[in-house]
Length: 295
Image (cartoon, rainbow, N blue to C red; front, side):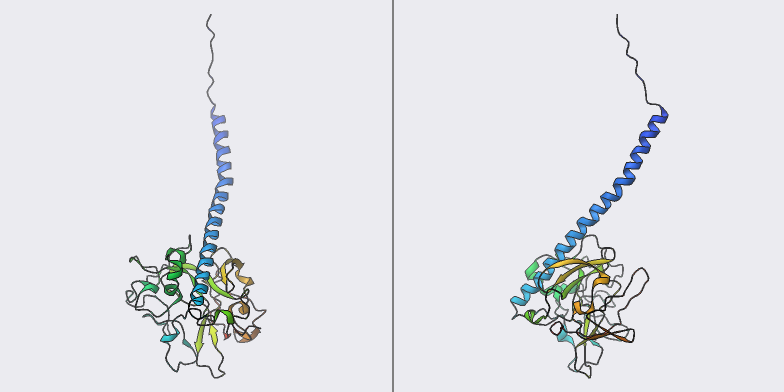
């Protein structure tokens, strides 16, 4: 006698339960996967910052202990008090000052290769290439290209692109003259990838007191690459993540007081105040800045 095996199909309720369980698991796991992917990009970014940072130190080792000059040679012999010491490559700001190593200007093709263009002034992006040998190393994974065509990376072969900015208060300085190398930032991350290799902060010249002043230190688009902070490279060669609110003006080379919206504050205790969520951009804060003079 043959045995009869009955086959029972899933009921609609059972299928709905299975679908609900899968949906719950997906809701739990997808954010975890997204966080893991973001963490991987943050780690890769930290590696790129460190390699870029070390490239500048190698450059200094081969250049009589002098860190790369970021275009100061293009500044007039007798600059005014707020004459920018960032390279001119065809763009001017609303004061008429030249700025942006590799920025496009108007028309946007004045520097078709960005900071790698032979026509632009000396800058940290181009001078570092013999030590990095990779333009991709200067870009942060996961950071979008700038939406402004004057700053967005060029699609031309060999064009420069970067997600980092160099500390202008260290430009042309002796590497061994930095008074606090383990605390002095050389590189910061920025919010977008661009074709200009610029400085933040930017040194300026021509002040009556003879001190090397700088502004553009506390920018809303610098140091907020990963949540409320970013990766930083330091003058002793190490790199680490810091919340933007932890960065003090003295970390960038400000060695006395800093003018914060008209009030002078001590550089060794005053931290960055910019907040992209509130659209607060404290770029105008300024003071004497020299990485060799931080007490």
